[in-house]
Length: 483
Image (cartoon, rainbow, N blue to C red):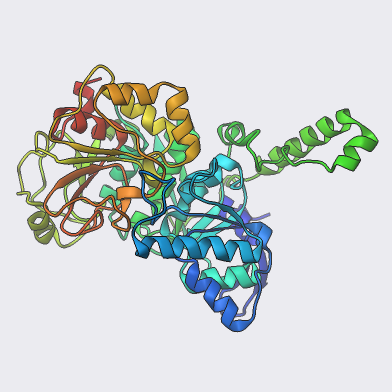
């Protein structure tokens, strides 16, 4: 039998039909929608007189356009309020599960999927959002799609796709103190460039990846598309299974009909639940690449070479260790001069010590509870720099709840910070949380394009520890100096 990669196994298991000389028709297990890319898709269905084919496979949340304060009040901006209202109406009309503002399960789409257990293992997962690659951390083929494709999935639960090439990225060794998953992926992108993964689906492996928590793995896969890749995945293991166990939509939490419980008794229910979970784990455990399988390209990295990272330019590959100098040449990507002009930096100058104005902790990249724990570990016992505006935005209502239950909220407030409400927030200039022109923002989000956080905003991507160090010193600082 020919050895297969995990990607091969999932892909082949979801082929509905192969078109000679063309793409494959793939069955889609899970479809996530939000308020930005779904209204046009639903309008298309209505024009064609079509219904959603399998509404139980789709889950909806509002996240991009929502404010992160006073969510109990009506959304003031009509450009934001209208698509949120459209999402409410469209999901109600089509029987789709929707998590609106204020719902205990509301949050950023790529955070609530794993939290709820609607994201499992071995699935095909799509969403009208580029960072759908996040869900690959649980061993899935997950990728972003366009609005016309959203309509296609709603109508057919399938999608036309050409099989991409495959790339293996192995990271081995022990990460240094103060180095996290965001530093790992920024380092990889800085080495391979923003086009290094073009035409490929990435598989991340190696001892370093295996040691990461599920939330850290999500950060890695989230930014795989910043290399131009179609998506990224990590083979599921015991870390994955322990993360999913007992979640609301995970196997084993399925509610058995009352009449069956009454007929056969509670012991049967418990046994069936346990059996359902064990069967799922048995199946998921086979989702790994076979020895001797082939990849189109392989890249090897050593964890010991990775330092706390920060970007200095206008794409994620323009990243350097936080204690180094801005380079004079960018070998992998063009546009260095323009990027430095936009950012107000000069080649050869040290980036450490540069004064900053804003700090953003959040997004589908770093808006989980572990990110807030890391941020608070630096903040505790210190005070926010007076001139720094900080937006600390949990990625979901569950994360917001955990922040308070663990006492993190108290630590942050005592240091002069405010914990806001869930949403995409300052990851992108699509809501009220915009960085003013010319201001520097250390951001734990995923893109530092020109104007991404607001017209003229200057974004420096980093992990939670680097962001926390900047928040209390008011300048770009190596977090290891504060650990």
